[in-house]
Amino acid sequence: MAPSAWMRCKPHISHRTERCMEEPIICLKDRGLEVGLVQEILAKLTAKDDKYACAIAEKIISESQDTDEWYEYFDDFASLLDHPKSLVRNRVLYILAANAQWDDENRFDAILNDYLAHVTDEKPITARQCIKALAQVGKAKPQYIPKITDYLRSADLSKYKDSMRPLIEQDIAETEKALTL
Image (cartoon, rainbow, N blue to C red; front, side, top):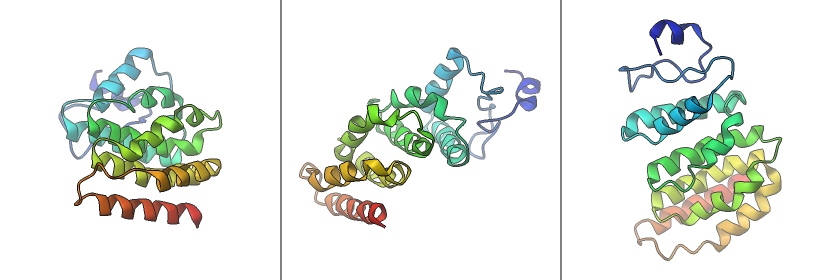
């Protein structure tokens, strides 16, 4: 995309980030996102350049706090829940959590079990990110709180090293507390 084109459109992802100034990040005109651009965003979220991918995810998460611009692509983001790369799973867990508040179509219902499965993700860092993000999901979707808390309480953490298990247990306690306030 030529600089003149991306400078004129309404940015849903900012044109440049502090972390990556080499190229503009995708700009979406008037929510008219084409399939090719969706695939490009997903490719950028799964890019080998983790700093760049993280910057894009952070921007989507930030914008999703205030607007439903990204909810339209909920299913596309959900398709990354089982990505082989844990950093991608971390990003998408937070993107989906940020968009839960806009979920009037109840799309989250279809992915809740897959989402909850990451409470015991193979990577303890991803498990921790999931547990923390569940507080936001539960606040946006209070009908999920009983299922979330039941899942957290019954999570088998025995596969995690002794150094990580207490941290995960602490995250679970903090998320349960946040959901019961």
